[in-house]
Length: 193
Image (cartoon, rainbow, N blue to C red; front, top):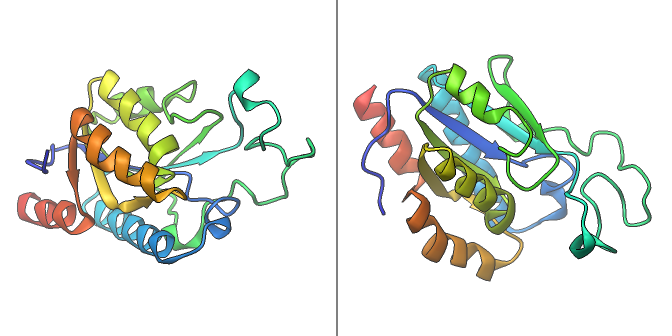
């Protein structure tokens, strides 16, 4: 479904655009998504709307993860390098931004994100980040379950698997909320604020 409105208190939630993840994924799609997420963050800040920057430092334990690289550990079980969870410079993180650290795919699971958003009076979340079919989709599902009006900025997200990205955007996201480009979100923001 296409973007129909921006609620008076909309928040931007940017998923996993951090130094340990973004540089490992190269290409135009990553560069474009990072640039669009940064544009969204700038627009939200200019209008005094909440920007929530999410990083990840762990992964849910379980049998299906056995032998896979853990987001908090290297392949051999050693701790990740210093700065791995730091946000990328392109986001131009500001003191007014809110920070959430997650240890699972969804930014809502055991993080306090829902409490933060409710305390801010947020009724709508616009999501951006990496990876579309994992962290972004998990967060979108949880946001929908929590009753938020969900908007997915499809050009401000990417996935290392182009088919997973396309599946999320075309099949999953229309069931969870509205999809829009960064320009559509920013244009609606300018027209309504």
